[in-house]
Image 1 (tube, one colour):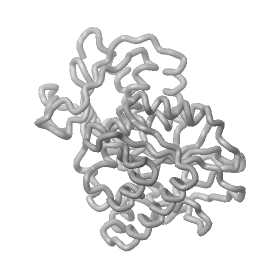
Image 2 (cartoon, one colour):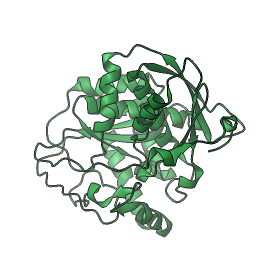
Image 3 (tube, helix red, strand yellow):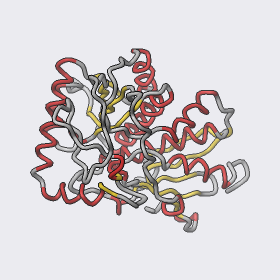
Image 4 (cartoon, helix red, strand yellow):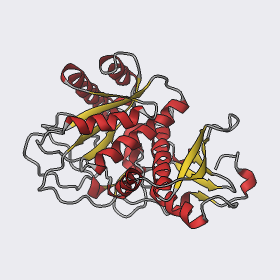
Length: 332
């Protein structure tokens, strides 16, 4: 890297935090390349989920979350990021070029960066403790600043969101290609990718919001109190690749903000993976003014809950392209 840029170790440290971002089925669909003046993010087409995510919306969300994680990590290390999204029209897999610029870290930069390692997708029931409205407002404001719309689903919109999720679960249960794909990526025991069996609880009949039915779930979920989880729908005014990437950045902002104040979180996309149920959510929750991209479930974990096992990630070397810097515009 050239003079005026972070040294290689700083960039690798930031990337090691970036790849802690959540991704659909923990497939980690990103590749990175370090150039002389910038860092490049690519969508890895070999990680596609054709049955679950035929238009790659979930993959773009996942990469957007990793992009925001990188920006937060760089800021905490003394570098802000100038981001050029979809910089190469000839290569749709080239999602972003990130130019680091010297920056004085703020207390918020450091706090959100620290939240990256603590954030986990908690699929268990949450406690009955209510969430202070200010916490939801803060997460919403930070997502809004990144170009997203966040709507809290309450009353009739919440009932509709629950119904859309139930219908999506039924449709997926009837789809053998979806079930085969899900079985390939979940119920893992010793893998750097996919959803480990130890991180997935068995769905319960009394669940208000049906959980995705992962293979071989082994996570204990012994909460017996009412679940006061809030449901936030993150949407965008457009539904193109740029908007979906930015929705992933907004998702990261919501998750890290919630984690920083002690809340448990879990992103949900199943009701948005089927066109009919996604249309229900767009009409019933977002009043047809925005396109729903992801749902975030958040609340307080019960004090009796055991710590979640850490979900594994692939080694940085496996997602870092070390080819000739002249290949910056090609797909990684």
